[in-house]
Image (cartoon, rainbow, N blue to C red; front, side):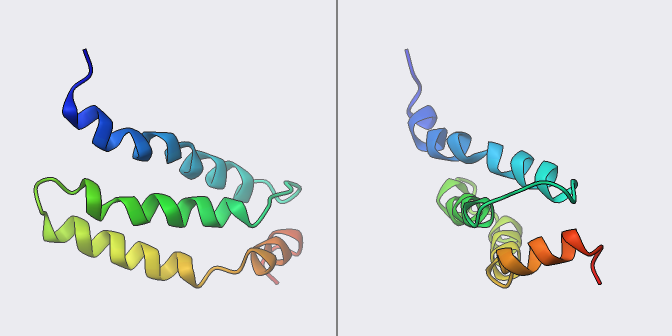
Amino acid sequence: MAHQGDKEIEPFLRKQPATTDMAEKLGNPDAVFRDSLVNNLVELVDLIPALNFTVDPELDQLARATRDKLANLDPENLRTDLRYGGK
């Protein structure tokens, strides 16, 4: 039998591979990635406040700070930086 919490955390678990995918893709300068790579991670971070069951202000702050940094990432700039070694 599924727990009530399982239903609430399930969307987060579906998005979890986004972090692994982004790390793998950005670690390989020859990798091809779509804009959705960044967008999927933004969606994951957007779920954190809803899953903050303990109402931890540090977790909310971490989610906001991460969201702000991700919002400034332009996938095309990431592609260029990877191809040219950040130059």
